[in-house]
Length: 395
Image 1 (cartoon, one colour):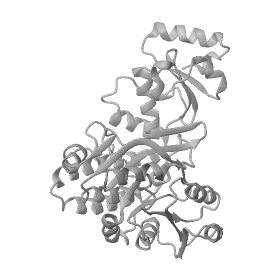
Image 2 (cartoon, one colour; image 1 turned 90 degrees about the vertical axis):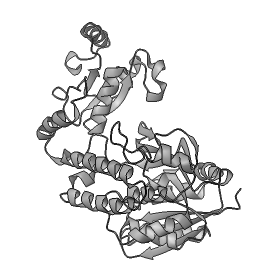
Image 3 (cartoon, one colour; image 1 turned 45 degrees about the horizontal axis):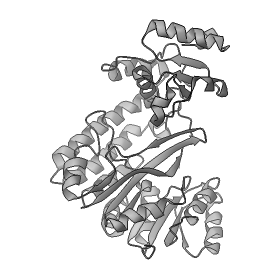
Image 4 (cartoon, helix red, strand yellow; image 1 turned 120 degrees about the horizontal axis):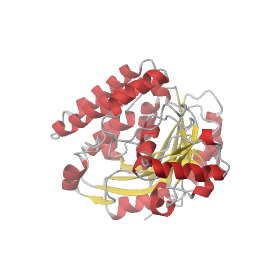
C-alpha cells in the first residue's frame, strides 16, 4: 500500500515552542511514503531555523520560505509545489498519532474514495480534552449517498445549526487534482474566519465518494481554557470578516444544482455565528441576551446567577439536567468542568463520567448538583457535606 505517496503540508508562522513536536509526529508516522512540505510563512522567531534543522536530517522534508500572506495562501503554495496525488494538512502547533496516515490511506486506497474524514481531539491539557467527529455514521458514501445523506445537513443541522461534517482540513485526506482548482480560486482571499469551511464544502461539491471514520488521530492544541472566548469573537472587525466568509462561500454554493438546500444551511450558520459574536460584551449584558435567545426551548437552565464566570466546577449528575447544563456552559465557554460525576457513572461511558469519590482528586470552586428533584438534591447535599465539602460550595 505504501507505493502511494502522501504530501503533508504544514503552514508555519511563529510557533517555535510547538513546531518540533509537530514535525516529529509527522516523521514518526508508520506510513512512511510521505512528502513533508513546511511552509515558513514569514516567521520572525526561530521557526525557520527549526524547519531547516529537520530538513537537513530527513530528505522527505522540503522547506519553502516566503513572505507572510496568511494560512490560505501558505496552504496553496504548499499544494502547488506538492508532487503526490494525495494531500493533507497539519497546523504547526498541533500533532498527530503515529498511525494516522496508515489508517486513513488504507481507506483512500482500499475504497478508492475522493475524501476520507476522521475525528479530532480538542486538547486543552492531558486531563482536559474533547473528542469530536462527523455526525454521520461511519462508512463508505457513494455519489447518491453524499447527495441524499450528507448534503442536507453537512453545513448546518436542522437540530442545532451546527455542521454535521467537520470543516477542519487537517483531519482529512484529499485528492490533489480535485483540491487544487478550489484552492486556486481562493488563494488571494483574506480569510480571518471560515477558510476551512469554504474549502471543504466547495470540495464536497466535486466528489463522488467519501469515507467517514469516527476514530481520532489528530490533536488540536487549544491555548485558551474552555472558559475563555476565542480571539476571533473578540475582534472588533469580526462581523465584517464573517460577512466576507459568507459571501465567498455563498457565491460558490450558488453555482451548485443543490444551491437551495446548501445556501439555506449557510444562512443558518451565518445567523448562529453572528449571535456568537456578541460574546465579547460584558458578562451581565451577555447573560441577559443569552437567556432571551438560547433558552426558549430549554427546560433546565444552568444557575448562572450562582456560579461566577470563569469558575472551576464539578458537575454532579449526568442525566437530562446534567447534560443540558453541560451543553449550555460549554456552548458559551462560561466555566471549566474539571470533573463530571454520577452515582451510576458506568452507564455514561461515552461521556467520561467518574465515580463520586473522585471529587477529592480535583480542584473546584463549586459543585453543581444537576437534579430537578429537590428531595434528591437535599440528600446529595447531605452526602457531600459528610465528605467534608463546604456547604457554600454546593450549588
